[in-house]
Length: 285
Ligand code: ARG
Image (cartoon, rainbow, N blue to C red):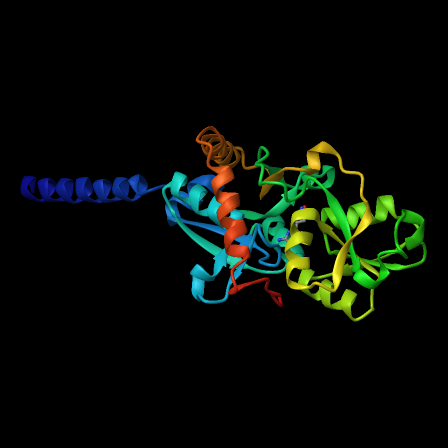
């Protein structure tokens, strides 16, 4: 009898140990940062139609094809978090939906800080990528340079802007009598402008420079949007209420800033953007 009691005891101890073992297993990640670390992957959504921030090197394939300032930044963030990077290319508005639904934790896609975004997402501290967005301009056909010189000239005209972008907000606010036409992808907007389907396309200045370099039939309108200082730098967009991830991203941004890394990243992005294999890609969702 004693013998059996010992055996039962041993079995019980074993079962208890196994049970405890199960409890001691790595717990379910409690927040987005823990989840990223547990999975070993940082997934970042971006819309590669915005040179020099994010575009495609057509001489490469797979993950390597995505290049530009934000891609370098995304790699740096992943490295700082000690995980691998996976880029998911999608349209600009889809990027924002993906973060909002939580299908990706983060999007880095040249986002300006805006009040609406600040309400709906966690936005990082500013990172400053060269001169890209210090000015916000309207691209027009070179032949129309004399025709469009002031805001009133666009009254009743079709003016394109990327869907869910700062530029769309600027057109609505500063050209209230124009018809704002939402464009899914910037490259499509360029074609619409060249085909005469729209009269102007609102873009960030640095992006406009890149577009004109490849499309000499387009110019910047002599009139420009009024730009608030907070629109000039960019922010990383994250799913709302993830303070741990936000803090980790801000710490990495500070480290990159203190290390003086941004200027080199921007110069590299400009150089790549000027290469023959650089293209801006339209991603169909
Ligand atoms: N900075 C502008 C915004 O916040 C434009 C960003 C466009 N980015 C892109 N990848 N298409 O809306």
